[in-house]
Length: 276
Image (tube, rainbow, N blue to C red; front, side, top):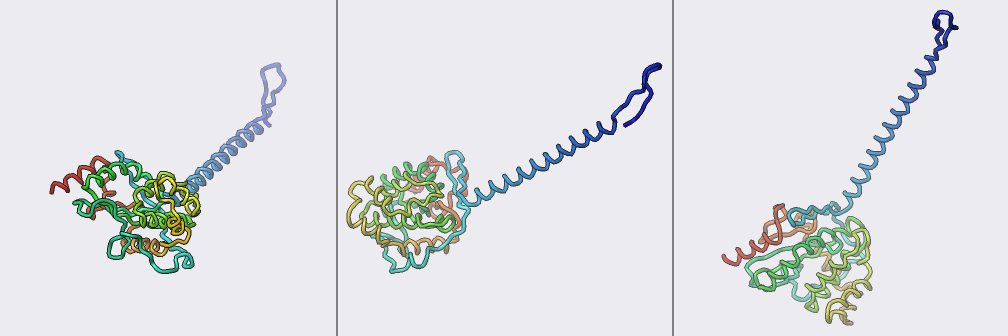
């Protein structure tokens, strides 16, 4: 507190400088504390978002192209679940019998797809490109080689990828893979929801495909008849050096490296291959 003389004839004035400065200093300190706290909150939020992105599928949409990357480590099924003989689905092709073919064998263009029925990016690819792929396979211009993997089971835990793949292989035994494949992606649960681990749900969805829900199909699904085959297919995915789903190759070339890829561009590529 400072004592200064006032105007002539007036009593001295008391000026509370010290208190004012302390109040100012207190306000500044409070602001600094608030700024530090906000910065901590921002850092924590960035870390939280990073963890969420790191554990999920990153989808990039560009000119109708869908580029999917699964940022998860590939895992193996529990040995007790995948033990047993490898039962290859009817009509499966390839040196290791892990290819499920769709389309005419003599089609001049080939699309190779590695996919996981729990993978959101795989569903996005199916939604964006499915109609075009169906059109080209029906016209005899394109054949598709499907490989089923269990990447999400390894990254997120659970058995939904494997059980759905086994059910799809059971559908292949009845010649109804393509139709059931479409149903599985159309009804795909959230990535974190392991709903496809429930065989009853997989059998329920089979009711959407004419003639698929039979005692033979139910037995195949419930027994996990093709579980070891699914594990073998996933092993082929790992040996191929692939790291994400879907991985899509056109005549051996990874078309996901082309960010300008669209269904129309794919159609043009197939038509060019058929001209040659």
